[in-house]
Amino acid sequence: VAGGKETFDIAVKGDGGGMQIEFTGSGAADWKFEQGAGLVETISAINIKTAKMNGQDVPAADMQAMVEGMIIGQTTTSTIKIDEKGKEMVLVDTNGVTTNCKR
Image 1 (tube, one colour):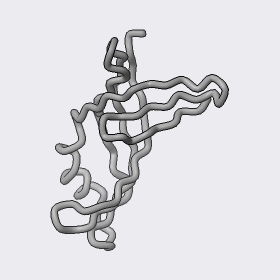
Image 2 (spheres, one colour):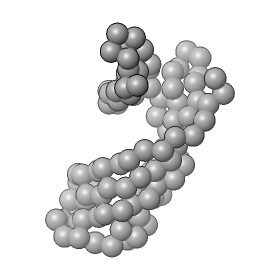
Image 3 (cartoon, one colour):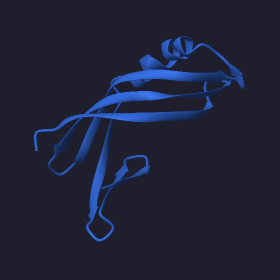
Image 4 (cartoon, helix red, strand yellow):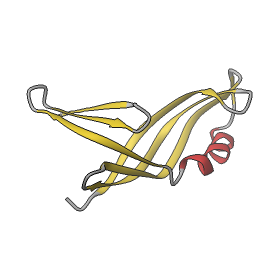
């Protein structure tokens, strides 16, 4: 398999340099399989739709400008397990984050 492109939804909530940030949106990534490594995904685009800082609404464009440089180009590698009985693919990245993809 040569690889391809994917789209995803994103929701982030946490500490961002001493302030609480929260945002939702969507994004795009490129993916490929690497023998012996698993699934490698690289984020290529992000579009922030809603944003908050310290619980207050802020313009999505402001949050986009703040986080885009930290997110675009980030790469993660995941191991792959196919669960034929449950008809899903289970990915576990190097940080231990599990993603279940059901068919």
